[in-house]
Length: 202
Ligand SMILES: [Zn+2]
Image (tube, rainbow, N blue to C red; front, side, top):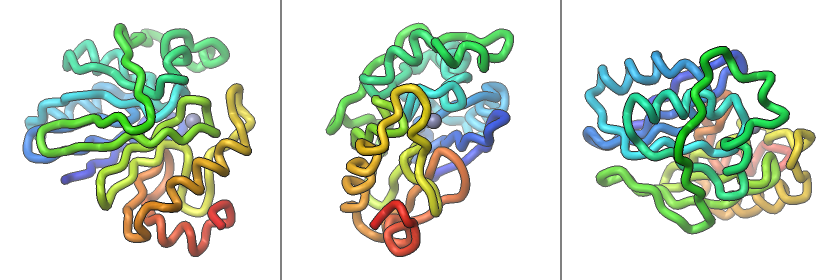
């Protein structure tokens, strides 16, 4: 498995292109569709799915443009579908020329998303938003804005829930210590490192 990270948009969102051979998944295309597409084309990848870990604009602004260019389905946590269908309070952050994803499929806890030999299990991790999900494949966790190196996602935005995020952190804390965590912002880390040093993970 290869995990390619691009920092996109003004909030420095991590967009991941996860691939095995020529099969790939794009996770959190927060902006800069052109840049993401050029990496995909350079590597000659076929994209099986575009996955949005949660319904915040900085994680999905480019989802519609990529869907149009690649014809791949867009997925997000079932409880965040409405946030992708109608940006609501986030409308003012949408750049000119924003393309909304046309068809969005909801993910629930335990669902799997595959691309060739890659398979990720969906872990429902509400708190930062109601429909936040993490994607887990043995050894790798794409954590969205649940867990960062040394920190966690904010819970003060509409739909945030500080109690729920604690429970979600307990859930991912049960994964093996050597699981590499690729967060929605900032550097990668491991579950073991965060359990040892992240004050929110005790
Ligand atoms: Zn967010």
